[in-house]
Length: 111
Image (cartoon, rainbow, N blue to C red; front, side, top):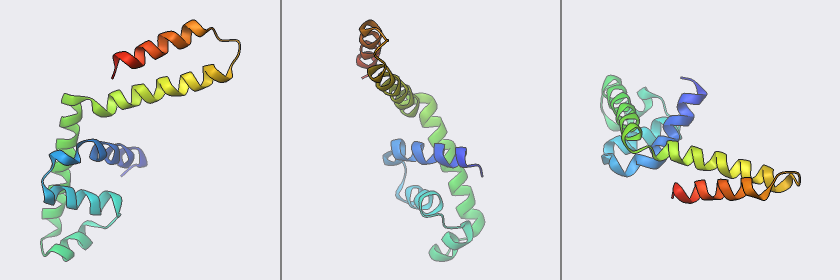
């Protein structure tokens, strides 16, 4: 699994974990946050490795589906990009305050 995918799933988990069942939340936390293997999780909870794998994959798909419908992570990323750009503008004295006003307005519209 790539680092980019792991990072994305971790962000999606942060945004949507309250929509998951306790078991889904537990398996995702153990697999992604605590870096336990599927076999370790299976052994700990007395289920097959395949059962854990299926649960994790289904939950990943659910997280992606939630994001597709709700766009919380996408909107978070957009706001973070605007904030980064604002920070650059603040330190660059050659930029006009009008650009800062436009960006602040964009942020207000995404609240």
